[in-house]
Image 1 (spheres, rainbow, N blue to C red):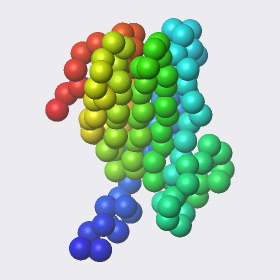
Image 2: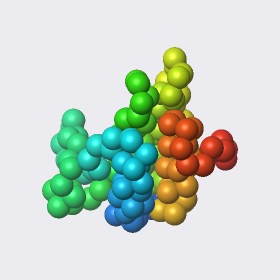
Image 3: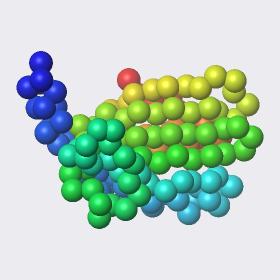
Length: 135
């Protein structure tokens, strides 16, 4: 079983630096809509457990994940983490909602991850694309 886990961790499907560019390319637009975005965060695959979140990309030798948290009106908020194998963890409390929604969409490319970001921001804050994610 350990070999399977190591093989999964070593498999790179998506370039996380390009995925981070998808995040940073949206920051000004989010801020213009009144959303507050935190720093882009990184986790290094080789860091000892518990792996710390890093905001300085230079401190991450082998990126395992990249993420962002965004706050909106009231208690609304969004957290998106993309892992190197293309899996994402998405948690959000939409404007006016009383339950956190959790999803795990896949992204095969940085551009696909950008579409996931747009979709989640739209559903969480009522801005951007409002369609549901594809299964």
